[in-house]
Length: 135
Image (tube, rainbow, N blue to C red; front, side, top):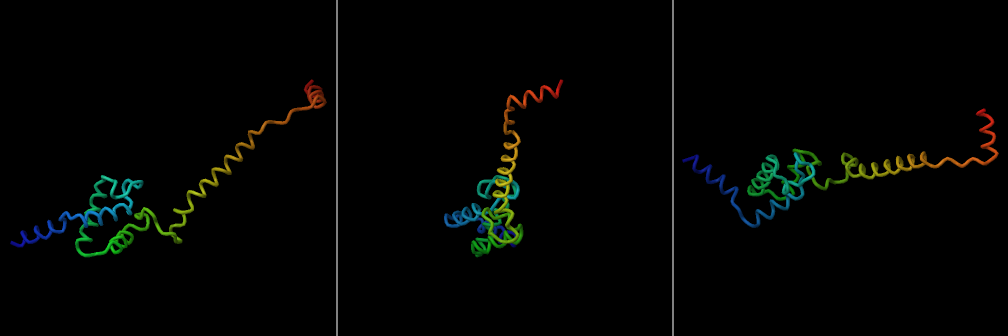
């Protein structure tokens, strides 16, 4: 009898309601798949992403708000799980990194192009002097 009650409770926690689906999808679009890393939880079919979506659904069914679920995921997996991490001391590299790489690439390109600059043409007097030195 106890197993039946647990089974009924478990199936009711996963009951499909349009509002619950919308809330789960909204949160899953804000969180990064920890396996794929370039997809949201909503887009990923990785087993961990499926588990995390189910965990989101369970927590929302238990009465937690979207903010509480998001905070739980951040506490458990860090700011990296957020698709748009907040700007703070620990995430500065995430925000500034692309710009630093762009600046470094521009500096490197400028340096390479300067090295490839054509050598100046020699005047006739300089050519005559060079030829004389080579003899």
